[in-house]
Length: 425
Image 1: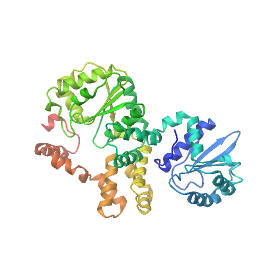
Image 2: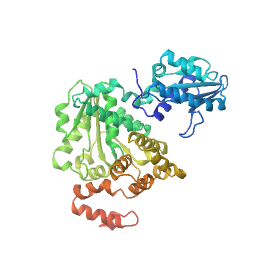
Image 3: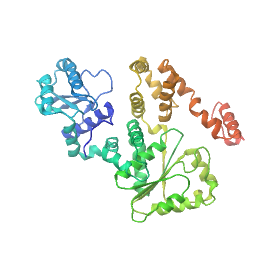
Image 4: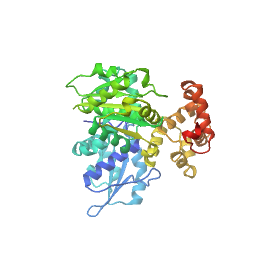
């Protein structure tokens, strides 16, 4: 498969290059945190080949003139480093003449023109090392071939708007192996997976990423909109199918009782899927609603088949994951350099990454709210929204729960520490 790398941010591309060179040299490649890199993105300290310094230039959306100017500007740093060998890897697809021009700038540190790798060479390395391609699923999920499969799937309406929405979602997605790997393992073992967690943690996004993965494996996608009868009607023996039931217990409160047979039919369908080859069933719900359902719904409480759930928690996102989610949003929403510098003063960006209210949805909401608010001091706005996320939850609080539920929620908030049900009563 050929990639144009346009869906990757620069740090995604750098991590891809790091893994490709590790596979090529059969030695761990060091990569460095973002910042003033002194001309180093990656470094290989091999015993026989000496110190190799690698610079990654993600210029997939930029003309060659921009790449050339960047390399010329980089040369004084390279000279100061004086490496035994220097590699330049770029996502730009270079012609032989363009490689010659870059080599003239970078010699004698580039030992030959082969030390300059463009998009063609990166694709060649990916074909030679498919294990790297598999790990970087953001790369192939955003490929033209996969997007074409999405657009030609009966579930999706074929339109440019949809294509852009999918591309945008995948650009923002950070491939945390914890949640994705956990869900894939559950589906491999049981064919059924309930993805649960707090609101805004990324349940639906993870489910949709899994859908796209199975679509690429030639599964037919069936999205259930209202009740399990839709899945029963769409079920086709002998055809690879993946079913998605988003918020299957309701989005704010337990709604499974609305159809008295829904619980029984749901469990029956899950049992059947768990025994079938080429069938997958992905369900999402909020953790507290799932707990409520297991306590109050007889069919769910006494189910007698093996399935598992993938609970996404804030702990599933490492500090690096949180930082990359924030970084992707800053890039995607074109936040100004002045605003980004405001976050970096005295490393206070760590206050955002470590904030107890951090969630992917809240990060996205901050970006949207900041643009609509007319500006201001970015860091103060960010921290204030994280600490007082009333704008995010105002609609749910005022319109989607009952007056009694609002009173109960306010009562719970009045306690200074967690409260038992008995004390609350």
